[in-house]
Image 1 (cartoon, rainbow over the protein chains, first blue to last red):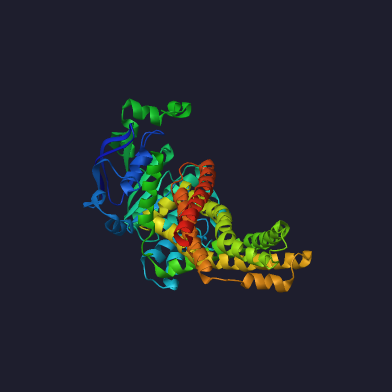
Image 2 (spheres, each protein chain N blue to C red; image 1 turned 90 degrees about the vertical axis):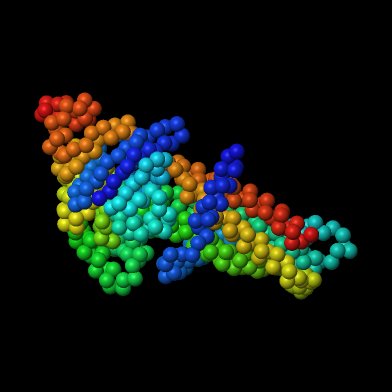
Length: 247
Length: 246
């Protein structure tokens, strides 16, 4: 379980996160939703330590990540996988080298064993035989899938996904959502997904945290979110005319 | 006040960069890759500029020697001194600051804006050490070799220009380049080169590492890396010359 306790983060006079507390449960797909600029990405970066929190703490299974030094964090980071918005694959490396990179950095496995793991991860994301392609040769959906394969290569306990289906067509976006859900269930990972895609919310959201102006405005399940009469959430969910009609 | 911010961040980054690499095998592979990227790929421009600069020094020196009291072998002597003391270590380093510095800043800057640096950090890798340290070590090792090649080629270019234009005989030129040779001059050039190699790679690494934004900022970081490393090269050239030759 990942626990955020009273997280605050400011950039100068801009208070992005205000005393935010929530829990992300094990084996579930936990979604952070909210409008653009609400503080979702900053919150996720605080969770993984890319931003230092001003106040509060982040606990990974009761281990206080916020107070750890680089070496202690390194141990936790070996249990963390992250899918970045643009994939963040290393341009100079092939797909195989990208997925093998964390294994080469943190394990003493033989090359054969590492290749075996790479092929296993590629199979999981339905990208067998793409080992020798470079990131520039991949489509948007393939990039995301390779990024997922890299994120799970170390068999992580925690998976973070920052807007995993942004810039993808609805079919591919759905595929990525399903993949995240499958991996979460199969490997019992604590998954945290940052999104503003309502399809994802209704498809994979086991637990949803709605952030509004840097505050935790609402949290609950995907069933609850459709029933809530919270004005800001209603505006968020039923933003288009089509969804208003459907409502 | 901005300069203190940059200085503080630069030294904090160096504190992250100058550490033992996490995996020796990976570091070794990166080092060889950087030898090619920073060294071998820079040889072309260094060869062309060195040969022509040596030739120009010979022609200009010959045209400026009006007095018959000055022996012709002075041309060879002047060419050797110019190449070893100043042209090869300083001017070639300035050229390398442009070529290598912009390459490093844009490479790391692009990795920063496309979240590849964040990805390294998430994987528990020290991005500063992983990305910048091999470049610094590679430059410290390969730049002196490039500068020595430049010295030889400059002197050779001067000899070729002198012979082809009939300004100096081969005998006089070779006598001139051997005259009063002091190995300390080469040592002085090497000390300067190593210092400049560190400046070029670390300053370019710094500007690349702290790039924020998009393509425009990567371009700006690349330009800043070249400008600031060039200024620092000129500044440290003065200091080192005063310290080592006075």
